[in-house]
Each structure stands twice: as C-alpha cells, then as structure tokens.
Amino acid sequence: MKALVLSGGRGTRLRPITHTSAKQLIPIANKPILWYGLEAIAQAGIRDVGIIVGDTAADIRASVGDGSRFGIRATYIPQDAPLGLAHAVWTAREFLGREPFLMFLGDNLIKDSLKSLVDRFSREKPNALLLLAPVPNPSAFGVVELSGERIVRLIEKPADPPSNLALVGVYLFDSSIFDAITRLKPSGRGELEITEAIQLLLDDGKKMAHQKIERWWKDTGKKEDLLEANRFVLKEMEDDNIQGEVEQCEIRGPLAVGKGTRLIRCRITGPCVIGEHCVLEDSTIGPFTSISSNVRIVRSEINHSILLEDVRLTNLPRPLADSLLGRGVQITRDNSCEGSLRIMVGDQGEIQL
Image 1 (cartoon, rainbow, N blue to C red):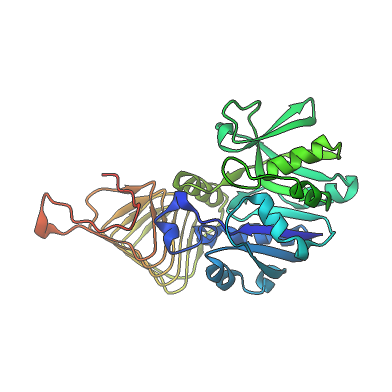
Image 2 (cartoon, rainbow, N blue to C red):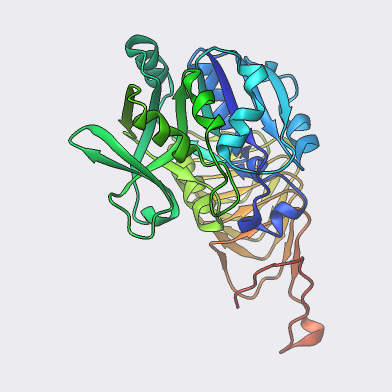
C-alpha cells in the first residue's frame, strides 16, 4: 500500500501567516503539522508516500526532504492548481498505479493510530474505507448519511446536513476511485470533489466501509483550531525535558526547553514548550503555549498561544492570550508615545485590542 498526502493548499484562512509559509508547516508543540501525519503513516507500515505540492513546494521539500527522517520514501507530485481533492488523486495516478492507497490531508492532526485502518482495509478489502468524526458544524465539511451502519449518501458542505458525521480527511481507496473521478464534473466551487467520487462508488454498488474517530482530530485550517490542536498535544506532556538554562524561575507543570535557551526570573505554568536559543526574562508564560526558536520575551505575559521563530515581545502592557504570531513579529510597548498605538502588520492581519 502507498500513501498520498495533500500539501498543496494555499491556507487562505490563515493569512498573513501563510503568505510566507505553507500552512502544513505551522508548528504544533514546535513540530510542523505535516510531520505528525508522516509519522503516523510510517507507524502504520506504509513506506512509499506521494506528497501533492503547489505554490509552497520548496518549503515542503525543505522540511520533509527525502522522507528518511520519518522512515518513508517521499515522492513530490506537483499540482498545477488546487482544483479539489479528487483532482489531486487524479494528478497522482501515475505514482499510485493500481495499488490501494491511503489518502491523508496534510493539515489534519489525528490522534488515532492509522494502523488499525490499514489493517482493516487489508483484511476486509472494501473499495473505500472512510474515517469519520462527529462535529458541531457539519455544514463546513463533507458529511456522511448513514442507514444503520451503512453509508447511503455523501454531501459536500451541505446547507442542511443530514447528520453530524464529517469526513476527517483520511481515506483508503482501491483503484476503482480513478474510474469514478473520470466521470466527475467540476462542482459549484470549480473543484472535483472527492465526496462526489465516493458517491459514484456507492451508486455503482461498490463495497464501502467506515470507522469513527476514537480519540481526537483537528482540521487546523483556522487560528482557533491550531490553538486547540496545540492544547491537545501539550496536554499529553508528562515529564520535563529542560536542556537550556533556568535561573531563579518558578515552574509548575510539564515543560520542555531547547538547547541554548535561557529562562531568567520567569514564572512558567506548563504544559508548554520553548524552542532553542530563546531568551525569556522577567516574564510569565501560561499553560498551553508553544514558543519556537530564537524568540526573545522580556517583561511580558503570554498564555494559550503559538509563537513562531524570531518573535520579539517587550514590555507588553497586558497579557497576550489565544494568539498566533508569525515569524519575526515584534510587539513592543514604547513609553515615548503614551496613549498611542503604533502598529505595522501584514496583509489581512487581525488585531484585537
């Protein structure tokens, strides 16, 4: 079995962060989202992995390389434009051949092991096996309608959802999916929808199976989802892993600190993770915070946030919470302009004061 990982999306809902970086490489607990998926695929015993790439192909290649660090062989497959999930599958048809394959959306974070899915597919040999999860907002997803335990219908982003069971971005297919894709027409969104291709398999009487998420899953397309995924991952930290220097600090809860980092007179409540070569001084870091490398924080308070590389925070007048700060962001309180705000922010940025 092979795997196909989709990493070609533009991440418009996460701009301006994704103006300069692939959304699949935004760190969760200081590790790119995409890496979690590749590790899960390798743990399921799959070695040949095709990665669909688009405008951010160079970033994805630089991060994943040949795949050996994950125990896989990575093959990069360019997609000319993000024309739908089914279009991505069709683009990869030469790589996939006639073998069954696992399809995984590269911006998904799934705690369940993929091995049970792969083993079940190999054992029962359906034409398609779908991973499902109940969601509070099914109209934002592809939704499955069941009759008992049998799938009877799939609808992409329905205005009136027939159920709350969403497709979570993990699918297993045999080669019959290619025949279904050849019969698709672009949807109202101008895309070839994988839900419509699966519906054609249903209409053809193909064997369909599904499995529900047992633990948790996050589609990390929005800031709030990223922060929640970060909280889920950090919540599972149990032990400290402090490789930097800690001076006169008060620490409660699990904490990971990278090499070359200095914590000076800080109050830190875990779980949280701090990268390499950072300096945190006279600051308070609350739980569920991930701080990437080369960050400097002085006399500031942060909690439940994700900070990317090279962020600088100095003398913040109020706590920073529920925030996602991109690379190189600088926020400084300048006492020379009391009562005023001086701000520079990228395209489509969001500021809440």
